[in-house]
Length: 435
Image (cartoon, rainbow, N blue to C red; front, side, top):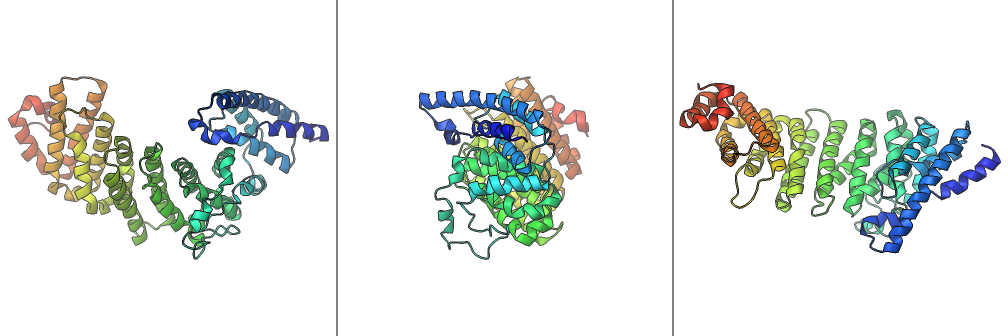
């Protein structure tokens, strides 16, 4: 790039420095601050448009210049509060000019634009030079408290999204060289004390797990560190972000276990049990049972964990089945949560299918919940979409129960049809006949 155009690049990039107030945007009450940030958004959009034109005029940029452009623009390819649709469109247009970033460019971004932002808050369990876990936390047992002091990186709202952009573009073969630059900021976010940053860390870790070599996770000891951090996310309850955090952390932990452990190994079994037994049942269901959104989030992810744990799920049937059946039963004076009922029925189908050899012991408990829900729906007279969806899901549970316990056709199902074919016929007779 010519010296003249290089001089033009600097002022445009400075206009894209995201004000630190955006880090607390949702809590800002001062009208003058909101007005100033609104004006900044407008000017940033104009700066992105000018930057896009300038970059299109140049055939090549130096490595340093490309790093500066992407570091400034990547945070606008996100959902941050500093973005309007037009600025996101401009940012995506600029980023497309450089295609897929290569190793030198990613190293430039992580080394010179990410690392300096997080340098003042090194993670106490990581060697910043290698990305390996330390034999003991730096600073002793209370070192994590020092880790939370200052937190200058939170004054740079775009830094999190730059890390995310880099992780989404790192190829599997590049992680070995970039590991010491990638994992410290990811773990810093993941182990933060604020749920909003933990959620961002989980999302980035999920993207990382799509490409990171399993051997690298194990050799550096990060597999265990990352697993414990994800499991800890399941204890961050009673925050606005909790439902999303539960969904994201459970699925990320499952992906980590599948990536870093051997199928059929004791380690895989133990870690999956920790997710289900300690994380969902022992944490969410014990301490957040009254929070329907959080409860529903934990039930939403159950089928994935159950199918991965496979027959090992039987050790949790005493907790799983009563919890999944409970939302199906009517509560006087309270309207049911349709979405929780649907989530519970999906999870119940997964439990029956996975733990089929043990279902004969639980068929009466399951049928009691299914039938009570069915009768309530029929008696309500409702024919809306939600009602039909729940009825279909109830039928699918009956399907799975029949596959797991064929004797229910001649026993329980036949008796129900003889008792009241008008009530139970639509649920049972069309599928199984009168026996």
